[in-house]
Image 1 (cartoon, chains in turn orange, yellow):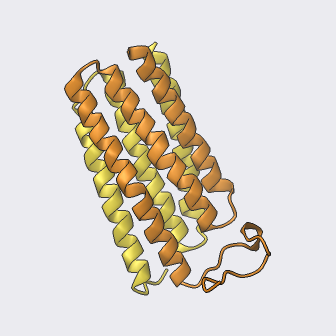
Image 2: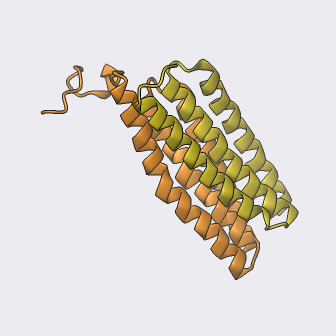
Length: 108
Length: 88
């Protein structure tokens, strides 16, 4: 079980590093939020799960799973709040993320 | 085994944190900086969890959960500030 925990921790840290690369390289906030959500919930969640598994103790594992469930619950909420705030301040997504290359029209 | 794995994980998390801090410094909008700070605090949760496995002190997992809670609250508060017409 300790080997599984170690592998999960390395995979989670790899996901977190890739998410940070996306935060650095993507062109605007809306695409960066996509990368940040991957670094947050699955990356750190896998690390928590691996840490709980490596303890080989049911109570510790339950505490780690509580943290994982909390991360999965709040990651979409904070991403939604941030993108809503950015859209309200009047900053449009870059045209490369739109199919017709035009502006965003929510009424369509 | 656990020693090597936690060393690799800590190195990767540190690299990711450097990337997030660069995004906080560069901006360009306030929401980008808030996003970078959110990622930094979330990554610190991961670092605490790896540290718990490395030292065998699993009490640190409780601290990780508490830090995750504070990270969400601060991000929500900053986003509400932006929504209420906050300035950069």
